Length: 373
Image (cartoon, rainbow, N blue to C red; front, side, top):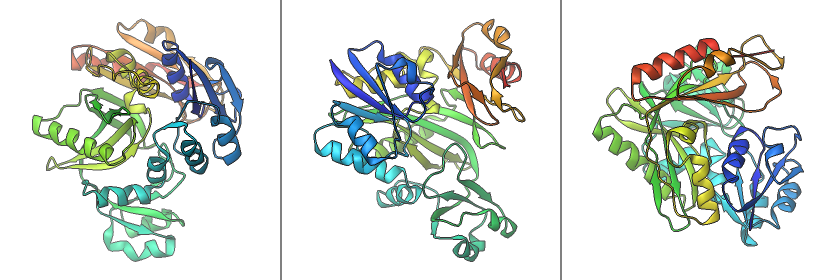
């Protein structure tokens, strides 16, 4: 039986472990919090810091395979493990590019992958020189996630909101749709594409609110989205699962926003709505099995359950009974004991052949199911 480890024990680790139960694999998790969502579902929990070289190296040295649930891990330790024969998904060379938004943008530029125009800024003083580049989005080079480390700079009055560290100043695109395309790649370089999803964001928190699958795209735009996603992934030269997030602008041009080299929020609906979920797919890749079937069983919408504003402390979910009465609604709570504003506490996937039914039920769930304390 193969031994496989996950760096990080949040909800992505939890859902990976739920899928792992179907495979002959012994699972290990490294995480600092022994009460994390994934802790009780693995065979072996090791308390440790995923950013610490020794913790990551010692965790991985006796394993066959390793994956991540967040990019912010110790890449040097993964490089040493890879050199010693441990299979890493994705390869550490990919993490070096992805975990730094500057390197990521330069990667797209190098391989002629369409992405919004950008300027690299070293500090806030340097940012002040680019007033003429506005409106733009300022993204911290390293350390940002889930809306943290991103600032919208519309006019010169917003410049003081920018970051005083190495960052990317990215020209604002007039977005018609935000699309995510999940791509799976196995050791042989074979690929499988999930149908792209359309993402709708909470404008205040800059967090994913809900997403619709399949995205409504013209055939021409769909081909463009798929071709660009494959181009992004091809040049990584790495097996794994990747979420390529893209903008479609008013002229139907497609730009890559960013890539996540792991299972991702934009693939959660695949658990019920597709034959092989993103989590099942990653285990197939890591354990050397054939790629799964990415076809949709039925159209779906996924709603994030996010901690309500003004509530911090032990979580109490309101409206669970009401939501569980909805036909074809599938509830996933992440096992987080504490809620706080903007924290992802769970999600609900709804499947239906009728788009209007999906939208109606998703709005009902957003109003009904609340994470409070």
